[in-house]
Amino acid sequence: MTKSASKPVELTHNFTTKSGKPITLGTGTGTKWQWLKKGRPEEEQNTLTTELVDSILLALENGYNHIDTAEVYTTHPEVAAAVKKSGIAREDLFITTKYTPGFRTFPAISSGPTEFIDRALKELETDYVDLFLIHSPFFEEKVSRGQTLESAWAEVIDAKKAGKVRHIGVSNFSKEHLERTFKVAGNPDFYPKVNQIEFHPYLQNQSPGIIKFAQENDILIEAYGPLSTLFRIKQNGVDVEDHPLKELIPKLAEKYGKTDAQILLRYTLQKKILPITTSSKLDRIRQSLEVYNFEISDEDVAEIDKTGSSYHFRQFFVEEYDH
Ligand SMILES: NC(=O)C1=CN([C@@H]2O[C@H](COP(=O)(O)OP(=O)(O)OC[C@H]3O[C@@H](n4cnc5c(N)ncnc54)[C@H](OP(=O)(O)O)[C@@H]3O)[C@@H](O)[C@H]2O)C=CC1
Ligand SMILES: O=C1Nc2ccccc2C1=O
Image (cartoon, rainbow, N blue to C red; front, side):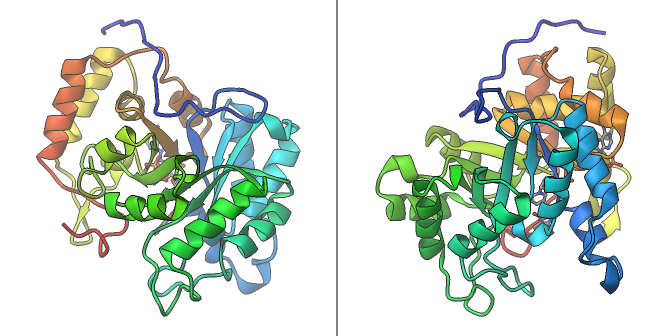
């Protein structure tokens, strides 16, 4: 086992809660939760999903202070309930939500970010959110209720000016999409400060050059799916058992005396990227926050990069970013 002292992780933005506490990794309420919620019988759709409330609560009680939700997840009520149950002061938490512009066969829910943010504040039982994102840049005439990337970004800026949100950003945006928001904003104060994208060693750039471009432009990259390479690799819909990181990650876990997940989360942080992850298991929740007390050597980071680059896997926005 290698023991190495850890240097503090310097991200593009070291965001804090309103009370000034550094934010942790994010705990997600999307992916499995949104499907679990939507799969429940009709008569249960307006009741809280208690497994999710309990899972968020477990994360909060064990040190997470950063929660990721979204309009399309329909998980605001569970977030509000967990926050209330935790007894943690609102200003000691960092809550992100995302406006959905519509997605393929899922039409936009709100008429735009302005209508959405007011509803989100009610559902979250708060008077501000810490981070407000546009969920994806793929506005479509049929599903986006007349909104375009430009009109939506202008409304996101209005929400910030009105003090309803502390920070503004985007998700799944490419370099070109970001440049369009810069044009709308004019003033860098109103450029996106975050771009939340799929990131793991098998997808080191969701779109060409996005990480470098974002980091050079003062935009924090947040990684969703950072653990995908541990259990989620599929090709043409079929699970792949054997892939290049299958050996390397456990080898590094052994070397550093950490778990496979901790290696992947620490790797993500050392790329100056903030992971958004999820677990409903206590040991995994605790493990995922114990990633600040060791450091992966530059050589080992380079080895993950190289091995990861020898293989390709994308789970989300496959049709939009098929390159
Ligand atoms: N902006 C966007 O377009 C998107 C945003 N997201 C956001 O990101 C969040 C996280 O995404 P997600 O893909 O779930 O992230 P992860 O890659 O972290 O995967 C989470 C899964 O990993 C399992 N897991 C957690 N810890 C461990 C561990 N130590 N060892 C092995 N398995 C583990 C969990 O299962 P278990 O509970 O059994 O531990 C869970 O099902 C979402 O909830 C959502 O908020 C996600 C997709 C798209
Ligand atoms: O959590 C999520 N799961 C998803 C699946 C498809 C598109 C977006 C998302 C999310 O944001």
